[in-house]
Every structure is written in structure tokens, then in C-alpha cells.
Amino acid sequence: MIGRAMLAAAMAVTLLPAPIAMAQERSFACAYGNSDMNIINERASNFGMIQMLAVYRDRYDAAYARKQCEAFANGEPYAITCLDGQRDWDAIEASIPDDYYGMSTKNLTSFLMEERKRGTGVEEAYDYCREVGAVK
Image (cartoon, rainbow, N blue to C red; front, side, top):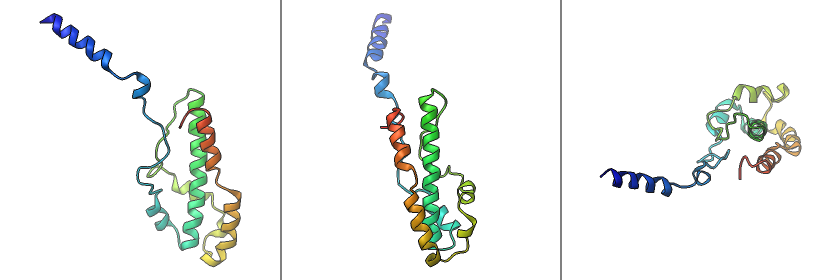
């Protein structure tokens, strides 16, 4: 009986997937792609500010992703996960120029175009993360 139990245990260990196969795939993607839109809608005064908050949310996400991937590359603790429900919305709003608040959607249009031209840095951050092997 003991021999069978030991044989069964040995077989179970050899049939386990290799550690690499068991590793969790790291990603900043969210399951439903919500991107905290309810929070953006609650915080924005009009459609222009909804769009502006989305740009600044993306910049926040890019900075966060870059920081986490740098930690990964340096062998430090990191958190590569969906950011929905985890973003610091007060910090995101604080990064938006005060002049934008209170503007109408029409008045925000030219500023929004300029902000979009500046970019968000998301692609660059994800490229870096892929380069260091933090994400696929």
C-alpha cells in the first residue's frame, strides 16, 4: 500500500506543468475594458471634460505601467494588473491644468486637440514593458 501511495505521489509530481507554464500572464488590460468610465462621467462637467479626463487617465496609466515595468526589470516588487478601481483620480484631476475646469466642450476643443497631439505615452510605456519582458 505504501509503495502505491509513493508511486502515485511521484507520478503526480512528474505530471505537474513546468513552472514557466504555470506562470501568470502579466497584463495591464482589463477584462471588460471599462477604464473607470463611470468615475470619469461622475467627475466631468461636460463631454469635453470627459474626453480630457480620458487623456489624462491614459497618461497616468502610462506612467504607472512604466514604473511597474522598471520595477520588474530591476527585480523589485511590481504590480502589473488592470487599473480599473485602483487609479488615483484625485492625482489625475490635479494633473489637468486649472484653466480647463469650467470650460464648455466647445472651448475645450482646441485644447483637447493639443493634448492629443502631445500624446499619452501609453504606446511607449507598453513597448518598454514588452522590451523588458514584463508583458507580452
